[in-house]
Image (cartoon, rainbow, N blue to C red; front, side, top):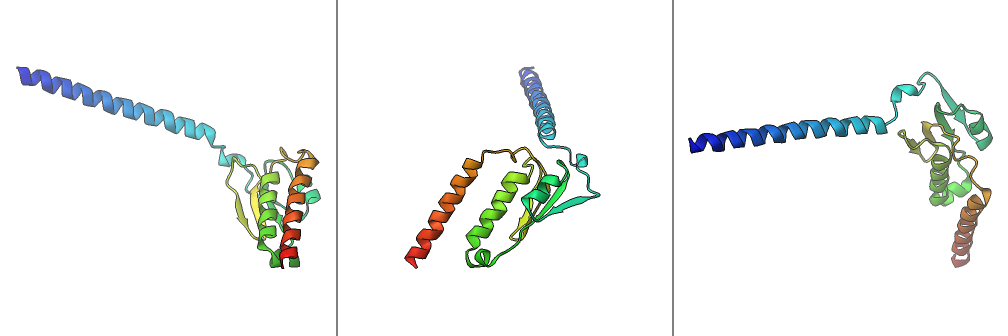
Length: 141
């Protein structure tokens, strides 16, 4: 009789543990679905291609966006400049709630205009630091 009580307690504990596990997995899956934007909401039938900031501003927000970067001789000599341009393009125009594809010659993402109105002085500060580092490198050479 003593063993029946132990067995009943064990079975009840296992059932409770499995029930809690299933419940928590359901809650976590629901939260993950809410955090990820619906991919169906992005129009896959068209893509806006831009080679300049002005063209990018004319593209519809929330649609597919391809930023084609024009590669210059300076970019080929200093690959960090090109990587910086790719990163800046992603940071300025891409909705980070969606996946972003990029190479050294372009960026494919879902377009947002949320960060376009950022203060210009912040951008100038970044460019000033870049110019200083390039000037220091040329002095060392």
